[in-house]
Image (cartoon, rainbow, N blue to C red; front, side, top):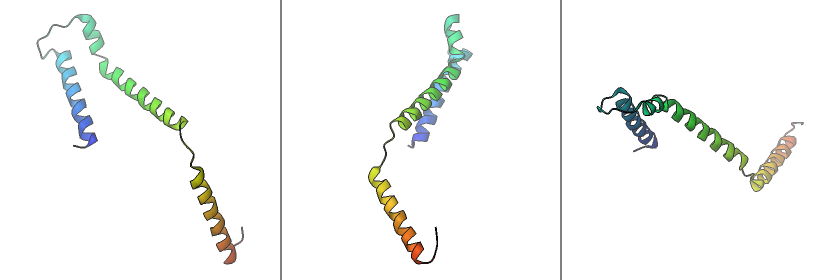
Length: 92
């Protein structure tokens, strides 16, 4: 099962549970304080997921590692290419 299918199954399970509780399909009498929290729950979860994603991206950007060896190798390849192009008559 792919990761997308796992997420879709999880969302379907949570969504159907939320719908069953809010629509009264299970025959449960929930207190009004529970219903007040239950109705906007999908919006809360969406905002929480967005905050988590933003925090994850921010953390990964803050802890991004430079590759000094790869940068030196790339610079040497650029110098070789410029020397080759200069030999062939191209001016920089």
